[in-house]
Image (cartoon, rainbow, N blue to C red; front, side, top):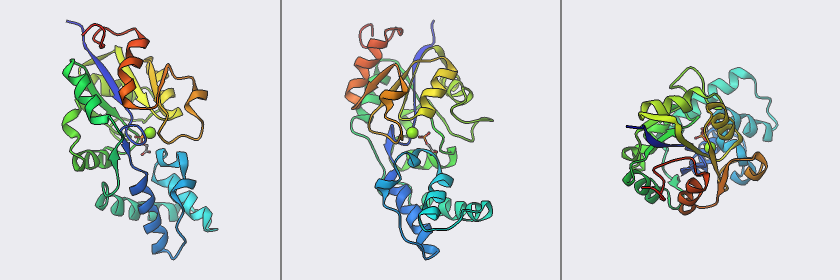
Length: 231
Ligand SMILES: O=C(O)COP(=O)(O)O
Ligand SMILES: [Mg+2]
């Protein structure tokens, strides 16, 4: 029997809108130092680049040089606060849950390959009641390297007992598109995530602006049995 078709989703900016909690945490850390908050609108693609990148920007905006030791101290403070407040504002993007249910009902495996460490990704998904929708959850610390390397993408597919020959990545950033290319699988980009470069300029195989459009995008990619057309 051929391996089940597999979707490999990015998390931040693709499945879940996490910017509210990430920016609230950044601003709590800045406030603990007596610094001014940074408006979330100015952080853009940094939401998909990890806590250290957010801290660097927050300090720079307050005229503080981000020495590595300071970043590491604040990183620990950031993680404590974020973990304790991981799903205050964060919610799945419109259509996410129905899409996961639809694809799984057709026999697709659904996986996550995020550059959030697994110890943050899992509590976030649990708090949102989403864990059970996934056959594998892979974070930045699950394997020896993170996206844009192929290893975590291929690892997520393997853990779900899928095959790269029947897998599609869905992401919001250059990191996701590069990781999909490295893994040799097609990639669908969403337009509502966290990216400094419009995804149109990154030449993904398909672009969607709502999860309702994922089925048609997957069908257009046309390489995969098990899509809506043949299920
Ligand atoms: O938290 C990050 O660094 C990025 O997470 P993502 O890969 O799910 O977008
Ligand atoms: Mg992302």
